[in-house]
Length: 113
Image 1: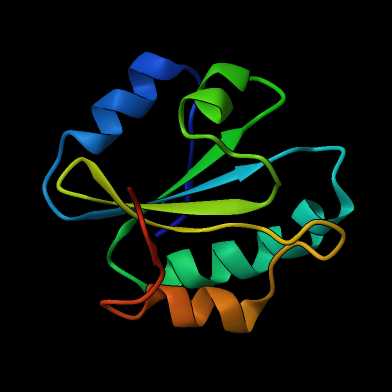
Image 2 (image 1 turned 60 degrees about the horizontal axis):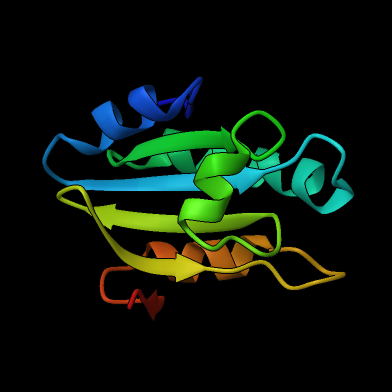
């Protein structure tokens, strides 16, 4: 399955209403770490049944603020519509394929408050 690009807050909220696990990548088009990470995120989306979303912080800064995303790329995991864990990007390094693969395993990731 390919990740779905989120266009607005209403679209984002609708995607989270379904049951199961949803992963949202917060990224920015100007960020070289984001552009380097996008192919890995897409590859993992194709390999998993979970819903994968793309949230552009350039277009939707209100979502970036709502979830306290301070560094892009950052991946948030939602389970049954609730934020359950996060994989925050590292300033000056971003994220890599190993950190994403580890995050995708059940029970992994920094738990959301």
